[in-house]
Image: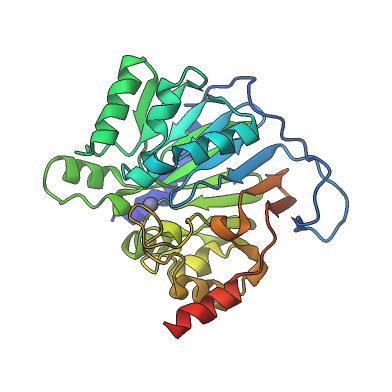
Length: 338
Ligand SMILES: [Zn+2]
C-alpha cells in the first residue's frame, strides 16, 4: 500500500517543504570557457548561464558528489575512509570549504569515510548533516554522529516523501527509505541491510533531474520505480547505483529514469583490500545502459574520466569529464574474456 501513497506524499511535500537555509558561500557556478571535452546537450551552440553545478568528485572506490546551487553547497556522501586525501584535494580544486548540508546515504565507510575530517578540521564549516536514521554499529558512524552533536550541528533523518530545499529553486525529493523500514530495522523486526536502506533521492531543478541512488540494489529499485510517473521530467542523469555493480541498474530503473548520462563512481580495479576488488563497473549494468540507448561516451567512470562536472540552467545542461576517454567497449570486451 505504501507505494500508492508515495507520489501524492511527494507532491504534498513539494508544496509544504521548507527545511532549507541559505547562505552566500556557494562557489561561483558561472560557466567558464569550456574545454574541448565538454558535451553540450542542446542543439543550440549558444552558451547558457548555469546556476546549478554538480560535480562527481574523483575519490576512488567511494562516493562523493558536490552540489552547488546559487545559495548552498551540498555534499552527498563523503568518500571512503582511506581516500580522505582525495576528497580534500577534490574540494580544494572546487574551492569549497563550507557545506550547508551533508547527506550521508548509508553508514558504509566508502560513503561516510570523510565526514569526520570535514567535521574536525577547522578549515571546513558544516552546517547540517542528514542520514537515514537507522542506528548503525559502525564506529565511524557513531563517532561522526557524536561529533555532529558535540558541535551542535543541525542533524536530521531523511525519509521517503520528504523534500529538502537545496536553495536557488533546487529541490531534493527523498524516495527511500520509507519510515516503516526505518522503524522495523531500529525496532529489531527486520535485519539491517545498509545498501538497501540507502537514501535515494531525485534532485530536481526545473526540467533537469539527477537521480542519486546510494548503494541501493535491485529490490529497492523495483519498489521505487514500479509506480513512478516517468513522464514527469525531461532532462535526466543517473548516478549509477552501487558503483556500477550488477546488484543495481535494473532494466526497469533505466526505462523509468531514461537517463541521458550515467555517472559511475568507482576506483581503479585492484586486488588490494579497501580498493575496487569488486571489478566495478560490472558487465551487466554497462550492457543495460547501452541497450537502453545511452551512447558509450555518455557513460562516465571516475577512474577513467576523472572528475565530472555538470552545469545546468534547469533546461540546458553540459557534462564535462576531466578526461575524455572512451573506455566502455574495451572494458566490456575485457570483462567478456573472463
Ligand atoms: Zn558504496
